[in-house]
Image 1: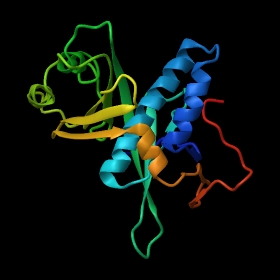
Image 2 (image 1 turned 180 degrees about the vertical axis):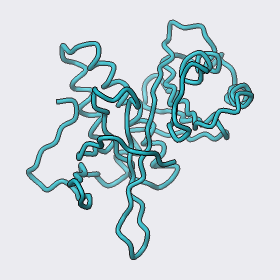
Image 3 (image 1 turned 135 degrees about the vertical axis):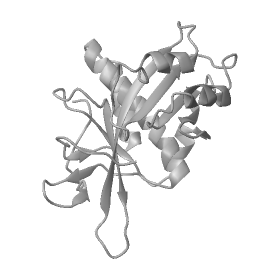
Length: 220
């Protein structure tokens, strides 16, 4: 679902790029704010791997400038419209993490945080809840969906849950306004697809793939 764009940067990174450089950066001595920003971007990158598998698209992402209050991360994909130039579809993504030391149910957590009446996001904003905990004894995804459906909330809500402690296997579950699930191995998906280049967009011009020799690295 597309949304209005404010101060879009000119560089868009594929998920593999964000995951590789984000992992390296998290090993450094960085501020808590930057660590939070990187973790949010990596969560969205993992989500986009599942979206790519589900939709056959090539999503890219960028972190959002500090002077913007929302969203946390912005994503984009190019849509081919035949004889016309490719159009860019954007998504604003708000990220929230349910940590392993919490006993709160995921639906209650979402109702208290991103879906709280105190929050107000455009209806096109996507909510991503990253579960950093074991969910084997938690509510079923259908139960979460039924619970959130009572809110009649317009935003798309996704849950990202790791389902293997060793391999990078995840479930991406949409729990609002409809229910759907995609299970995938992040490494397998990244290795099976052609390597994506960083995309650069000139202001007022058309986007193009980064030329060889021109370096753009996220989180620097």
